Amino acid sequence: MAPLPPVVRVMAASVRIADKAAEIIRGILSAGDLGIVEKTGINDLQTEADRSAQRCIVANLARQFPRLTVIGEEEPDDRPVPDHWLVEDGADPRAERVDCPEQLAGVTEEQIVVWVDPLDGTKEFTQGLLDHVTVLIGIAAGGRPAAGVINQPYFNYERPELPQGRTIFGLAGGAVAGFEPRAPPAGQRIVTTTRSHSTGLVQAALQALQPDQVVPVGGAGHKVLLLLEGRAHAYVFASPGCKKWDTCAPEAILSAVGGRLTDMHGDELRYDAAVQRLNSAGVLATAPGVQHDWYVQRVPQEVRDKLHAVA
Image 1: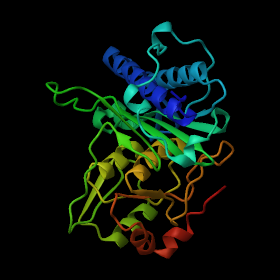
Image 2: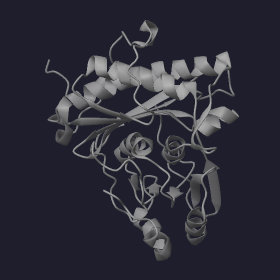
Image 3: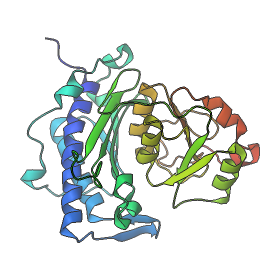
Image 4: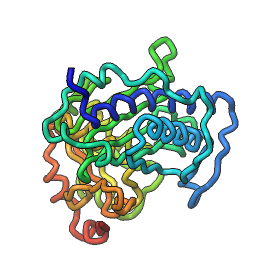
């Protein structure tokens, strides 16, 4: 049997690693001491769960794939991790069975850049809005998303009789697993956007789209999940507040099912190691079957002119 391509191996390992990070996040919340600090302000928080989850993810990736480039949201921390944070059971077998598209089969470990948001939706986490929280591991090659892993540590948390937590994953240009994609309702225009980082530009873009419903939620991962599950048609964020670790994993999975994620100009985001971390021209994503270009063209030119991409 031929060895699996590195992109598939990294994705399959990342599924297990994300599960372990989610376990750490749940444990810290249960213990009750979140260790909250403000990074740049009240809407940019960090908790012990963010810090510990990143340490877990980075340590496990480095241990299994020492030639990867890993870029995380939080500051690097080289302290040894506890033994029980290490993933000993290898890769997720479901992920190992996902067919690798031809264009990714030849990517080497050295060519892969992994973008990690250890806890997307931190503010919502501190406020008890646990369904907004995700762990994001985005795997890029050639500057574009190749694979993505999204873990929801608190999936079904309000329904304890059901299985708790889930991990979805997929290869760009390939297949997805862990959830059932659904189409958004026909004859409506439902738009999801930020709940805590709104600006005049964001509001101007939303008004121009004339949505039937606006769904403000936390976390880029959560917003893209609304598109994947057919609960929204578009994710609109006409602001430079989002980073590459927020969008790499969601974009990979969304593109695998036929959706799109770009900046507000309709241009592709880049995920090379040396790229600007900030998505300075905002984020626009659409569900499968939705006309992405319609949204780009409907956003006022004066809004787009104020959002400049930085390489």
